[in-house]
Every structure is written in C-alpha cells, then in structure tokens.
Image (tube, rainbow, N blue to C red; front, side, top):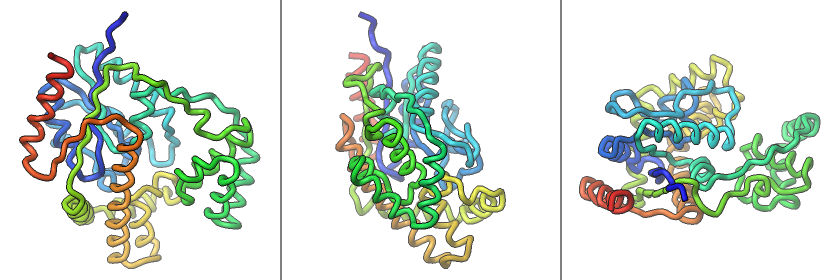
Length: 310
C-alpha cells in the first residue's frame, strides 16, 4: 500500500492569528503555504482580505493568492483542482504543504476529496431567476429554495444571489439538491493533520475590532473606491465582508461611522459562524491562543512531531 503524503492544515476564525502561526510552523517543517481563503485569490483586494504581505511571508512561498481578477468567477471546484496540483508540486520538491485559511468548505473540498459532478447548465433559466430577483428581491428568490433544497436554503445567505441561483439551477436541471452533486469521500487522500486555533471570545472580538480599525487606517476605503471606479461594484467578490459595508459608504448609502460599525459587527458574526462550521464539519486538534501564544506554538510543534516523526 502506498503511504499517504503529509498535509498540514491550519484553520480558525478571522483574526485568531493563523498567518503568524503558519509562518513559524512552515519554516520549521520546510513547508509552503496554500491559502485556504476564498477572497485572497483576487488581485487588487488586499486590505479588506487581510492578505499576507511579502514581509510577513518571511521567505515562505505562498500559493493561491492574486490569481484572479475581482470580476472572474472562482468556485470551490476551481479551488480544489488548483490546490491539489499545488500540493503535488510541493511534495515533489520534498517539502510539506500547509493549507492555511478560514474558508471551511474550500479546505474540506481538498482534504476530503469532494467529487464535483459536471452539472449541465440552463442559461435561460438562470437569467429568469436573476430577473426575478431584480423585481422581487433576494429574499423572495432565496425562499424558492426551501421546498426543493432545504440544506442550501439553510446554508446560503439570501444576499448570495449567485449561489442561490446556482442551487436552483442544479435542481432544475438534475432534480437533485446541490449538495448531492458534491459528495465527499469518507477519508482523506493525504495523511492530513488539522490544527485549529481558537481564542476566548471577548479577546477575539477585540482583535477583530482592532483589525478593522487597522484596515481603515491602511486605506481600505481608498481600496474600495478604486475597485468601484474600476467597475467592480456588481461583482460577487464585492459582496464579501470588508467590501460590501465600505461600498455602501462609498455610494453614500450610510455614514463612514455606520459602515465601520457594520463591518466590525459582520466580522464578529462571521468568526462565530466559522467556529461553528469547523466544529461541526471537521476533525480538528484545537489549540487555545488566548494566552501564552509561544507556549501553544511549542505544543503544536510537539503534536506535529508525534504525528509525522514519531
């Protein structure tokens, strides 16, 4: 039997410190990092995605960053395909691949090898749904999912119109819910170890608020203005947390203070959803980073040493 090749995964909520921890670990284990963040694939969207800088990389190669324009589509299946190729390439160099990020579905699709069926499209039906949403609103469109695909109805936000339409289209074409087209294998094709970073909620929320303030100071508003002036207003990427709130301010719909407050609130809610998702969907070894961060890093080192080098 061929021995599975190692894959180290680091997940956790936004602002918990995944980036800094992953750099320390990747340097120690001769690793390269594959970003597991659905937004960092987009060029020109740097501040709002908390994209790692060259200086922060500290010589550790990073992949799946800045590979798409903000108006280009990018799916879970796209991420899976590209990430698996990167994993193979890193292994061929004799290094260890690390997937680091907070987009749980993207990470899961790789480590549990989801099979994405090729589902036929019906562009006319898709256009009719889009027109329906324009006339009746996203909530009314989302409500259509309830009777045909309850899981997607519960998982998808009404404002994620693109995914709602896709779920309805898949059911229209196949007669089956969207998740039936995305069946995961029961085991990973890799020797996978998943490290989860967590933190006491009050401190995490404080870090999130501080991160948003730092983003504003670093020029997030100017970044969103540039993207808007470039014609990216209606792109799905601009509906991400960090962009939709500031875009509302740029368009004069809310005050700057209201936009920043909404961004902080949405980011805190997102962190809560991330933690719930990870705990329910993945087998994770958790490390609490609330205090004694360097001690926790040493504990992770020891855990990985026992996993791969015992």
